Image (cartoon, rainbow, N blue to C red; front, side, top):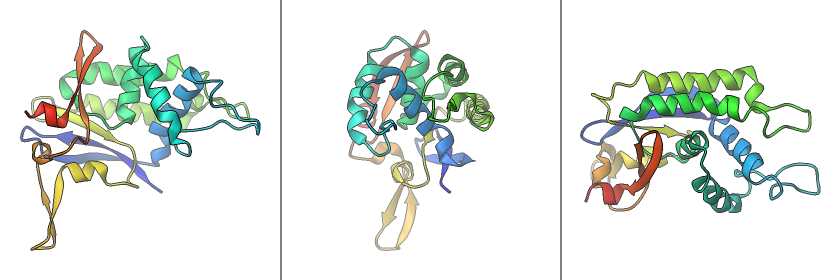
Length: 206
C-alpha cells in the first residue's frame, strides 16, 4: 500500500520527510473527488452510473484547476494546492491547518458514492485530515521555513527535488532545491489569509 508524507524544507532549501501517513488514498484523492463533484458536477457524470476522476482521467485537471483558481473559497484553494505538492511557508501553518479541518465541514455532502456514503463523513478519513493538520501545526517555522505535502510513495517527484544521482560513486546525494535548473513546483504567497501569488522555484531563487 502506498503512503503519503509531510516534507519540510530547511533554511538551506534541502528537504526531508518528517512524517509518513499510511494509505495515500485518504487525503489528496478525497480532495480531488470532492472538488470535482463540487465544481464539475455535470462534467464528471457518465452514462454508466459512475463518476470520472482525476486519477484515471487527467484531462479533468486543467478545467478543475481553472475553476478553483477563480473561486473565492480559500479553504478549497488551500487544500487543492496542497494536493498539487506546492510549497507552503511554515509561517502560514495556522491558516493551512485550519483550512484542512474546515474543508471537511464545508464539503461533507459532496462526492456521495452509489451506496450513499460521503467520504468526508467517514471516521477514518476525518482522522487522517485531522492528523495531517495537527502535524503541520507542530512544525517550527524558525527551523523549517517551508513544507510540502507529498501525495504518494508511488512516485519520487519530491525526492528528486532534494537528491541527485552521482554516476561516479553510484550514490544518491543530497541537494538544495535552488540547484535545480527546471520548474518543478511553486511557492504559495499568502497575505491576510488569501492566496496572493505563485512563484516557481526558478523565479524564487533568481
